[in-house]
Length: 66
Image (cartoon, rainbow, N blue to C red; front, side, top):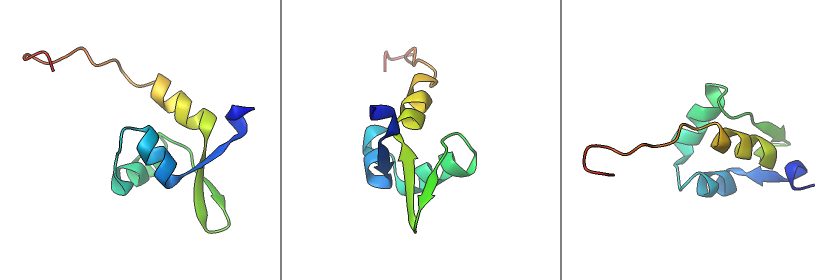
């Protein structure tokens, strides 16, 4: 049932590690993260956000271990 939950932009930005509004809009405009319009509000399904996270590449670390 949690898949049906809609998240607002602030919740998505926080879930994605505190990304900014511009970065979130970029993800929407490049179709990397689908968005829904509910009235004037831009909303995201929890399932779409979790799918986006699960499809991200794993970070292997840089030369300094970061």
